Image (cartoon, rainbow, N blue to C red; front, side, top):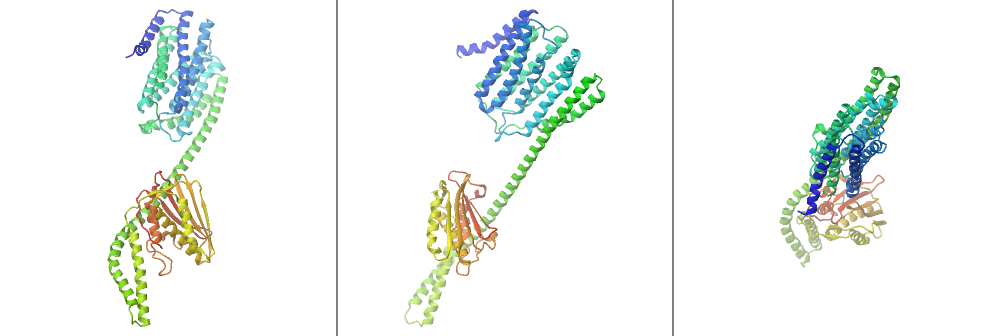
Length: 589
């Protein structure tokens, strides 16, 4: 251990012993007052500076340390006024003393700082219900001072009445602060636990010392610089040590904190409710039961009315926040329900594809062998010499139907393929341009116009070029067929980034979808017999799912169908709907 560290550890006990000896040997007078008041003022001033410095050292907890620094500053101002009268002017502190109000108010920023619960992690630190509840309680303390103490202090001076009332109210205020610190210390971990326990201990010592000083004053045994000031010096020194301790502690927010018991967690709103309910009770007491002069009664009634208006505004604010919170919860519930429905639909669709894929794979392999023989023999038969025209035509038709069946089997095998594809970063914009260019020949002379709008700064997705290209071709081909039925129209292709997703949309001005809920079902098709197998969009659905994406479709109010594909940006977490691995499928509808 270094000598400097040893000296720092011995400095506090040595200072404590020196202060104890000096206070024990002091006698009532200007020198004793200078000793006691001066030491307290010096420690408070240093503590105030350190508190505000902590606000710069720990920017995430700036408000907490600013509030504590503000409380220490008010405390210092009270002590400076006390020292000014006793040491500089060498006379007793007057009655009433303006510093009493400052001393009472200095606890309020401490309460506000602790009420913030800075150790708790909050993704968005906003004006919360807890803050409103505690602010209402703090304003209630100010009201209590104005109702209980202020009338006998400044409206009509009555020292024998206001002094005991002030001492009792100040004691209750400090006890509430100590209780809040105790709750914080028992429900926290790590560095904040040490901070809270130190604050709890030093302010407990201060509360006990303050009550001891008030008792000595009532017994006419107290003078500034007496041994009764020792707990005050110890508590202020401890507060300074706590502020210095916070400088070297890794103060972090707790993402998972120890929750408060239910009774303690609901204590703040219940106390806030009691504070509101106490106002009419105190007002009625002042109106009918208060035996003091009318001037004091009128003042108390006026203070009660003002407090009722102010706290009533906070009640409306609290109700507004509750309504917003309720609306937010309802929106989250609705979104969760929609996501659950979407996920359930995807799971059902996957089960359909998986079950059908297993059946199709086995059947297709069994059909493929005799089909190959039929196709080969039909070609040999068609090429055989000596066949009459009708026989040759029949042989050709057998070959055509066999080839059609072979294409269907190939689609079935492609649909049932379960091996995941190899994926790389893919430029979706380039694939869309390529898909549109490949379909241009098919669209010639059909009065179909294609409008392509792509984000020039669109990021890549993690996928397979061939599968995604085939997916885009399927959707464009279906749109072209739909537009061709009505003699032409417009196909709009757009792609842009929305947060962590790439959104690709195909919208046409065709007749729309007859049954949007069934378009992804296997073998569902509205095309003429011989033109489609009904597996194209099922295959497309599987490809999108295999890429952890989503595909949806709907009809536009003005007519036409819209297909929307969503893919996670390369390197981002997949969306909820894409959490279940998709089946790789591919076929043309």
